[in-house]
Image (tube, rainbow, N blue to C red; front, side, top):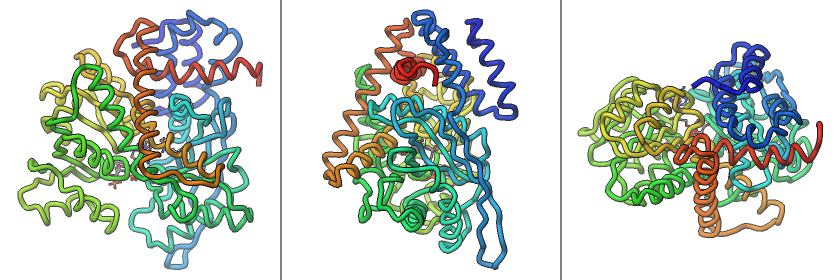
Length: 448
Ligand code: NDP
Ligand code: 2IT
């Protein structure tokens, strides 16, 4: 799957040289440049006017020390990042990830993907991402608060409701957003829509908590409907058991499917009767426990160590909702062997390029992350709209807008794939449709 266009191939080489030791970033850029080959043939100005050259370079990278005091009174120092990748169509927008695996390359891959995803939503948001190598697991609430306050003490100089609006991602949920919003408000003395995913009592939007998982199912519903299929009666496997996975389960079940497996970074559960989601919510959202605790209650369910085994469970629909590169070629082949019909990505870049190739070459419906998980950031943008209006929409209003946006993303991606001679290739379609709006804006600005 090499890039054939000489300029794009050379640019890819230079991206690798300029960003050494960042394989996830190289992977994300490579997929997009490959999709853009036919676009650059039709519109050579995107190359000659430097749009492609600029789009792979972040506008700004902020990297900072985050010192905080743990419960033993010791000073701990973490690293914080905010990559402000592209503001051509709106303020930088994208989540914050707190996980020990975070380094600059992870934030750059996520920030790069966010440019195209945010454009696909049709809403005025640019691309950014941030985070830290801080691990919230096993920390007390007081430790998480002190970390979040220290993180925001630096970050607050760089963000703003019209500049850059962070939100949650892995390890950052309502608790962390609350601590960070409180610190922003205190230091800057302004009550502004500077973060999304806020609590409902202080400017949050209804449906934001559910939005990524619900949106993933709305996208999948549209993708299935285009082929005369639906969720009804289907068996679904969902990796992860965090925010995205839980609400993907809730919506898939509401649409008539049976979810039989979920996981965390230690292992997975299989419940042939259908996962008891209330119990998963209690374990993950209330107790902050491990998924294996599920089998303490449901003795007939199985727990197995290791995450990748989840893809050996037969299913009609697979929704990877944990993390990048969690689904490799071998897992993709197992899914295909077991008759999977559709795969849609709730996590960012969960399938390796080899896995995507297996799905596409076997005619499996494949919804790439940029399109399929855009419901979270789309609803964040709706939260920004409500904050600007100083008004709140009802759950039903936001949910209806979310479903409309996800259908539109499916239609735009499918249409772009068709226009460029790659019918049904939603990877290429989403990359192209997301790129066009950003690229046209960049062209309008000249060199900047
Ligand atoms: P959470 O922190 O709520 O949950 C993350 C889940 O993924 C947990 O079950 C976690 O298990 C598992 N996980 C995390 N890292 C790994 C790893 N290295 N290996 C295996 N499993 C892992 O995060 P979210 O649900 O918010 O995010 C999940 C994915 O969805 C991410 O890729 C994120 O970028 C993406 N996403 C999130 C959006 C949002 O609105 N929250 C929007 C769009 C995409 P454990 O508890 O063991 O760590
Ligand atoms: O990957 C993502 O799109 C997110 N983590 C959500 C970003 C946001 O700003 O809501």
